Amino acid sequence: MKIAKPNLGDIVKNEYDVIVIGAGLAGLTCACKLAKSNKKVLLIEKEKFIGGRTSSWDDNGFYVEAGFHRHIGYYKKLPKILKEVGVKLNDIVMWEKEAEIKILKDEKIVLGISPFHNPITFIKDILGNNEILTIKDKISLAKLFIIGFKDYKFHPKELDKYSILEYANKLNITNNVKEYIVTSLSEGIFFLPKEKYSAKLFFGLFYPAIFHLISLRIGAYKGGMSELLAKPIADEFTKLGGTIKLNTKVSSLIKLNDKIIGVKTNKNIYSKCVVLATDIYNTKDLVSDLDSKEIKKILDLPTTSAITVHIELTKPMMPLDRTTFGPLSILTSFTEES
Picture 1: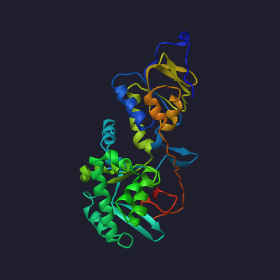
Picture 2: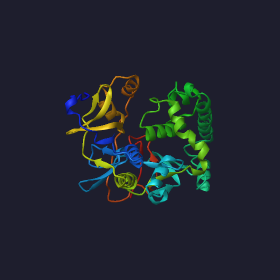
Picture 3: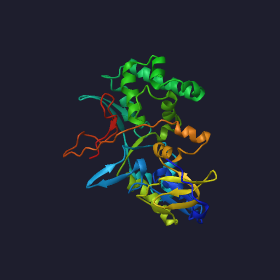
Picture 4: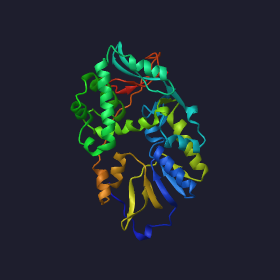
């Protein structure tokens, strides 16, 4: 991707204070905050719909979600953002009592995920699942998280030297815990095999739960995320005077004397500042010609591929709508949404 370098004679007066590229939750929130600060903001999105990785849309009569998403009860920023645009979390989220790890057709592990809001279910599931997780496995699972959280707190750099599989092997964690629990959390949340990413990353996701046990729970969204999450923020943004351009691809950034002064779409659009709120893949494409240590760090970042599959059936596939992991299948995480 080449950075467009305009002639001085082509430069016009800035049309905007800020151009934000990408109308996912990050871009929408950024644009809305800037508009509240009385900035003139343009939000550009290459798709025909808003939401980014949390988008939903009608594809010739088939309703599509960009991904399988859940709301964690101890989130702080997202509920605050939604409240600012008039959305009550309990109006858009259905809280689940349990998650499920599907082993074989008739074998599963059921995990209570809400110790404060559903304590009886939580305790029952800890004491249960004995056909697959033995007492030894449960002690091993507790050992993994207790020592892992301790190392995350006091020795994070050391923890970063191991993959989560290497770390589990170092602690002599049982095979059932590694194959069922660690695999489910690795592939179902990070979309990576357990040998492919850092133990620090693994424990870093769950560590905040220690301090928020009261709010620890998982919720499914009651509808399409573009409608429930993205649209209220976008509506607030436009009400504040912001402009959204959909179905508009940014082909390059416009650079002048080491400063980014705008973007090139089907025309040049100039601004005092440009914000990239895109995924790593598209960010790399836009900044590949920029030269700095910070940019090089971005270009060196690996990307992760994942596929979302929707299957429309004539009857429910499973008896319950709850978060499900499939560690022995190609479906890393899935749910019944009827």
